[in-house]
Length: 187
Image (tube, rainbow, N blue to C red; front, side, top):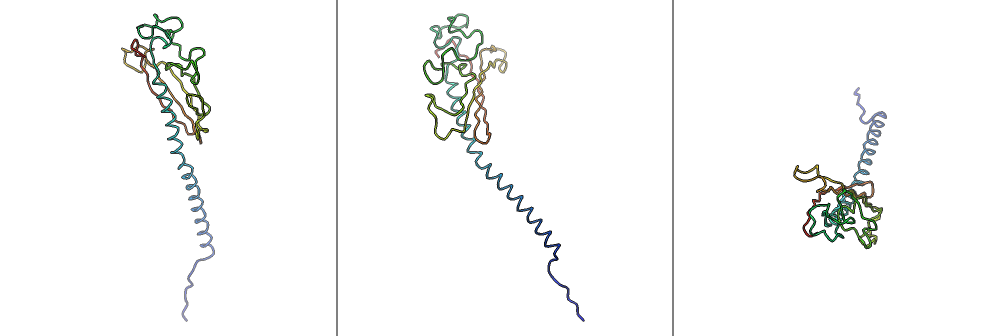
């Protein structure tokens, strides 16, 4: 008599195969979900970087002199002690002068005015909303940065500007830049 071996899978082998296949498919689904979520991230990060760069450029184009640009001595004064009382930056005060804003006259007119500035949603310089940027916000800090430079540069002659933009999905981009005082040259 000839006995033939039976070919095929046992019930136990089939169950183990189904479990392993199910775990593999679940793992692939999780990976696919993460890739889908992350595929939007570069666009959000690039937009946040563009917003931060634009705001940083706006700030760094403002003058940084011994006297406030509203002071009549802004073009000639070589020391902060010679500025008129309203235009002096001698005390190292960083922040906007009374009444100055980004949006209406009198507008921010020097780098330090932007310290503490923030936007809950992105708007242009005339306070008009920018389409498609409702999910983004921005904030600015300005601080003395003299310690970051060689000994020949006074502590109050350099400012560190930090612009932080937060976008959808908690994407955050921070740019830092320095601004050196250039008085008494024309602002």
